[in-house]
Image (cartoon, rainbow, N blue to C red; front, side):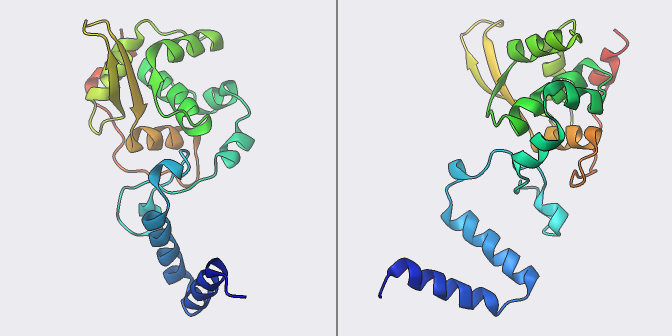
Length: 192
């Protein structure tokens, strides 16, 4: 039988068998990055390759099912994270939608509604999101604006640093502990 797919798999298998485990992982990661389109990769890629010693800040796989098994609903996640500021509350709910539910973009109205449902409403969700977007490192970035007024609907997503901040709050084992502090506008929220 001369099946090109079987031949390719046999070639790959023999090439990988000749490598040690670390080299094999690097080659497989390279092949995935080279041949799998980004839009087909999992959106719940939470840990960074820095955890594996590459020194880059690119996301890699952590199965969404692993997180779903630990946190069956947003209330479980929220209780574990125990956010104290409005910005942290927004981050936790945003992490739930982005990392667990796989939603690429978020909006303030949805986050505010979820916080109200949990019994933890915040005074001004826009101010919290703005503080996260202005923090260093950036914890949220705006991805889209619908309308031309200042009050136009905005869509945003958590950055790698924003995801890591929540992972640190909930104690995920592969969360990185780089500089995660935010600027004074976030810590000031708890006083206002």
